[in-house]
Length: 399
Image (cartoon, rainbow, N blue to C red; front, top):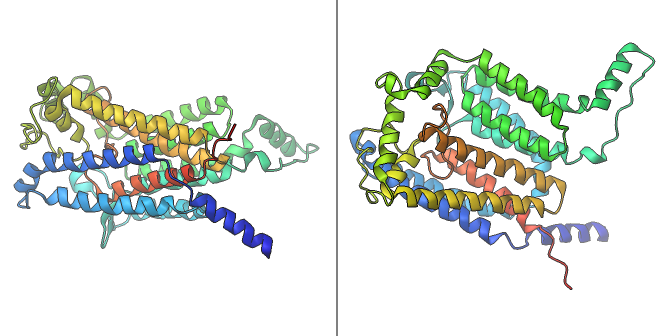
């Protein structure tokens, strides 16, 4: 009994250690800049919809405050508890992906896809956001025990047993549970459809699997399968997006309009921008400037210098996140952090690539910037998990 109390006290002390202040400051700074940018980018849209000019800003600000408070609370939780929570997070992800295909989901009348789930009080949430977190938590928890698990032995006297033993020696058998989970998610997201969300989930899963020590040959095989699946299941509007990406000016009214206006906004910013709040493209030229294309408005108002500042802040956050992963107390904390940081880094890269027409248009938002309360809450919750891991980084040994 005394030993149990001692272990519990030690666990509590580990969870109460100092959080990583550089990481915290970068998250808060990016969130603050994002909320201010939502205010500038959205007031023309809000006014045109008959709402107050600060409608989107106030909502985003409230969610930002709630998210930062939640981030701090989560950072105080011993991240070891996320091991058993991971199963429920994955089940919640499956439930949300199923529910969005029922009358509770919506989106067909606006974007040609059913990607949101109505929540009575919170408003709406994209199930893909829940799925990202669920996959990272579950895969990290399972892979963290990889080295301690006993290998299964098959009866090699039978044909089936011999085949299974060969596949196990190749490392395929341990990947089957992960593959089944990802295949189910791919199929469910196909029916929405939500290709960009599926890509991000695959990236998060691949990051955790890679950090977990899975052989590289399976990434080549799995990547080929995923790309083939996405190409074979590509919808008509997704094929059109590729054509628009190749030459947006050939489709000025049939899909190229948004990217054209985005490029106009970025180009108009020049070196130092037109000034905060002075964007012309947000005056109902660039559709929904507070969402996926919010970085275009930031570039127009703050110029190349302002864009570089934001990119540097994101780069510093990613580097600090990987530093936390390298110094984590255990394998579970390291895998969690790698999955979360890689997901964020890829999401930033894809969003900025889209608004600059480096890649075809997708529905990928910019973390901490794009308008969306539940997405911001989940992003800050993930940052809270990373901060929880940072609290248990072993102190450097003295002399």
